[in-house]
Image 1 (cartoon, rainbow, N blue to C red):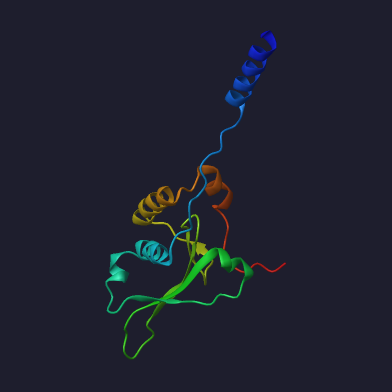
Image 2 (cartoon, rainbow, N blue to C red):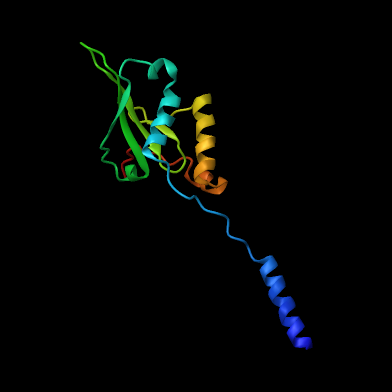
Length: 140
């Protein structure tokens, strides 16, 4: 009887001390969510341009598989309608302007990123690990 109680006590203590798994990210961001993040980064003055929209961009860098990449444009007869080329990390929601290789920041963008990160279950440690991942080409 003594040994049985001792074994039960050991099991209970082991379970109490064991690290419990933290729920992992349930999914990546969708393409539509990524486009909303780019729009939030660009702001209403840009997104209200005539026929503002997104085209998927084929980006050749192998790191691009972790990103949605877009060419953003609008209707501009007689001139260039390209606003820019952007990449959105599928987990963090970080938005990068590809030509300058610059991560974008705006208040509306940060608010939407926070909401979407909670929605997909992105943990703080995963965000910290992935936060500086860039889609930009870096020669070896």
